[in-house]
Length: 462
Image 1 (cartoon, rainbow, N blue to C red):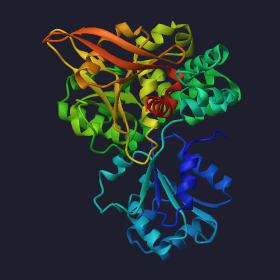
Image 2: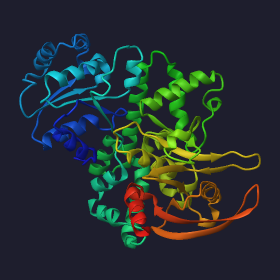
Image 3: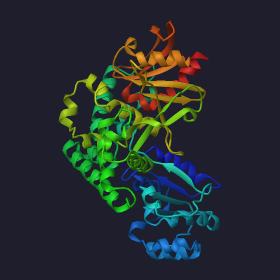
């Protein structure tokens, strides 16, 4: 059993007095159903689970919004009273009966004491052919992502978790722990965070069987496209799916995906996969103020894949290739490290709202400048670079810090954590200038500790 951080959110949701129905969003096979089953078991709840893909006739029942009739049908399926105390009603694969979403508000109004959770993947595919009022404000969304690196460590070698929790720029882990975490991070690049793959690796330590699981999951996604993609060309969706892993870290050009299709059609396919959480857009933001989204250019973005293990499978990178790559290659080539960091920056947003990621791009006549990610914490705007070089090589970061007058930056690389004061001379269009800022360097495996570390640095400065 793999402990998911999302269980803490579910516990808090369950205890709320004015609890709303919860819709668990996420891509196919990120562990939504397993999470709910584990949660019910740990909390001694009677789980009344209905897989709506197996009972498509229920869509007409939900459409009536007659709660008593709905409950009678659900009780006939589960063989239990779904309104009993200490029970949890779980409507899985809700995209198969879209009117169940509309009915959630009525379940809450007439059965306020019964916790209701719905889970669905590729909802946008299914809802594209339906027009009804969504219960805005009457349900809660939680976005579940693949297993994170910290969850992976806790499943594979839990004794190392304490070194992650205690790590800081002023307190690096012992060399042995650093090396072990670095090796686990390399393994994670291949295994990824799809629960079935992690569970198999935890039990068998077989990379060959993990590859077969990846193959099966990608096949499942392609089957889903064929099932739900009614308005978007199936072959175009498959082209986008194959394109993303090879374009990690690069600005998207629709012509590179399919030069024979009109840009608007390619954009629609990309948008659909992004809404279904198969990929994530990283928008360019001018980053002069908060919120970063207010200055985002939605026509300029990069794409992340939903999971780094699946990305490497689509790219055809097996463990033999990854294990033999030099460490600097892992950081600087193929966008693997940028995918790893971005995947976790998405996860750090804790799922209540749809994730948003940003980067900074300055396109010039002679040279471009680009910062891999820009994040915010409190009133801080923080550039994040994924690099292996020394601070003197961070030309784009220097330009950003000078233009945006920020004093704190983060670099992820392969080294133990550290903090340094950077002073560097730069050339601008007007004159030569000097930039000064504090640089926090962290190993890639520490990405989930970033909010805590930033808070600690701010307290020490204050």
